[in-house]
Every structure is written in structure tokens, then in C-alpha cells.
Length: 412
Ligand SMILES: *Cc1c(COP(=O)(O)O)cnc(C)c1O
Image (tube, rainbow, N blue to C red; front, side, top):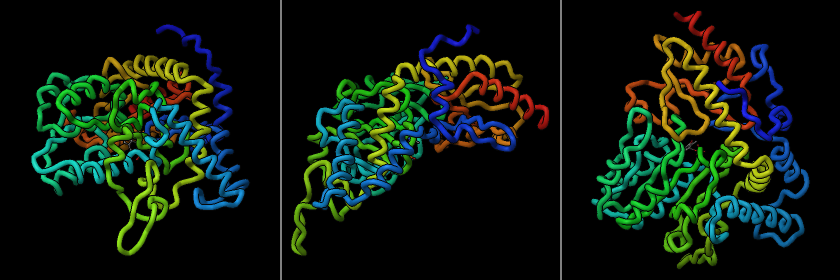
């Protein structure tokens, strides 16, 4: 193993931005390796939330008083920041949602219910999160569409030739994850999109995991829809983004009815707002939307490439270290991966691993990670998953290794 790469990021300095990392859990300094579930928030993001509530909390768009104008300006500035982050062509293509799940449901319920019909085929992959399976199953049940699934190999990579065989003129929609939350696999989404477009299908990419690790460019990808959650990119919970191409969004009817999404309401007929507001019914999550801009600035300040390089170093190091343990098998060994390591330990249930690691202050995730069909593909009930963020260190991986040795001592 080579020594730690000479990354330009000062990780010890960065750790000071995350107050939660000072905590002790069960008498030991916290090691937080559950970043794929949600990552921790830096002080600038926490402060942006406080500043909003202390300084200019008001409902947006409809007010003419000073605070309402200030809140509206901050809210819309976040939309421009997200537009730049995704390299979307138009600001109207950025819809604020409550998260990835909400964004996919919006597309399934609005696009799916109105433009898909019985016999149309929808393709997802074996490694989808439940939030990119169940909304499509619900739609299939209602409309009589047919769900097809791209298989994977034992390394946890999509079988692209099988994908091409699934595509036909019956394929109307492809919904695929950019980066697997359970395996870390980075999927070749540009290829997936291009092939789907060749048969005239529309494509949604689930970017929940990709957003804090990879450079994103929805125009270069030519994605029709791209969804993400703020809480997985150092931002607040309960806030997400749906990107959609303007002509497609324009053609879609609203998903929820209520305030903000209307032009005029009478009991005879209601007309809807223009993009993006026709999809933003009700009072949105203003504070969290405002703070997302700060989260994006924070990441940009560190440099996404630098973050990725650091996490990649952790991934290499952890892979080498963990492989030394007897009876440990890594689930997901794709050539292109982000810093996620899922594994099983011979003879020990993942839940026991999680509990004993927690006793040592180490937070990992155990179970099926909302990807039960993927676990079935590997013939396992679940895994233990360590997933890395910019503030993690090699020392923490050493602690994980010690922790797992202890697990084996206690359980075997
Ligand atoms: C977390 C996650 C989701 C769901 O995101 P929510 O924020 O819970 O809506 C969907 N897909 C992937 C790949 C995820 O990692």
C-alpha cells in the first residue's frame, strides 16, 4: 500500500467545520461511516439555517413586505445555484422537492400516469433503491405497464449487452441509478441514456449518491430527468431537486394541487402556474432550500475533484485493509466505484456487527440498504456498509478494522 496521497485538502481543518464529529459515542470518539444514508452538515450550512430563521423568515413569492422579498430572493438564488451545479440550461428546469423519493414519485405520477399506457415497458436495474422501484410498480399496477430489470454481474456492474437486448420500441421509460448506494458502483449513465434515446424512451437518473462525489452535467448526459437529495450532499434533510428538460416538464400536468402552483382559481376552472411553480404546490421547505446553496458552495470551495480523490484514497485503503480479515467478503467490486464498502463476515449476522461496532463508537449501516432485490441477487439478507465522506480519515478505517477484529473475537 502506498502512503496517503498528497491531497491538497487539509482534512483535520475540514473536520473542524463539522461540529458533530467532536462527539463521543460510548466513550469513544465518533467514527461516522454512514454517509451514504446521510452525510454530516458543515457549520456554514447550519449557520445558513439559523440566519434564515433569525433574520428573514417569511413566506415566499406572495408577500410584498421586505422579509418576504428577502426570503424569495434567497430561495430563487438557490435555484440558480442548483442550475449551475447541474449545468441545466434553464432555471425553470429546477423543481424543488422533498428529496429523491419525492422527485421520482412526481415523475411517475405526472409523466407516467399521463404519457404511459398499458403494454408500455419501463426499465430499471437490479441495483435500484426501493424509491426507484416501488413508484414504477405502483404505476404498472395502475396503468398495465411492464417493468423490466437490467441484470448485473457478480462484481455489481450492469450487464450492458443485456440492457440493449431489453430495449425495443415498447420501451417508453428507463429509470436508473447513477451510483449504487449499496455497492458504490458508478454506472455508465451516458451510455444508458443514449441507448434509451435511440428507441425513443425517456430517461430518469437517480443521482442521490452521485451528487456529492461526481461532477454532474445534465446537458452533457442528455438526461431527461435527474433527481437528488440535499441531505446526501452536506445539505439539510427534507429537500431535494428534480431536474427535467423544459419541453417535457411543460407538457406534464401538475402532480399536487394547492397554493403557489396556480395562476387563477375559480370553482369552474383553475389555470396553472408556469414552470417551475406548477410543480411546487404549497409552502416549500424555504429554509432548507436556502441552505442548499451554502452546501453547494461549501463543496465547490473544497473542489469536487479533491473530495473524490480523498474518498478514493480511503476506498483503496479500506479495501486493502478489510480484505486482510479472514472470512470477509466485499459485495460490490466494480471497476468504477465511489467510497462505499459493503461486506459480509462469515458466520456473523450484520446486525451483530453493527451493534458491536456501535459500542466502539463506529457508525455503519447494516441491512438491505433499501435495495432488497439487489440483496436477493447476491443471495444475502444484508450487508454491513461503510461509506466515506470528505471528513473521514485512514485512522478511522484502522479503527473499523480493529472493531471488526473485536466482533470476530466476540462472535466466533
Ligand atoms: C438515499 C437514496 C434514495 C432516496 O433518497 P431520499 O432522500 O430518502 O428520498 C434514492 N436512491 C439512492 C441511490 C439513494 O442513495
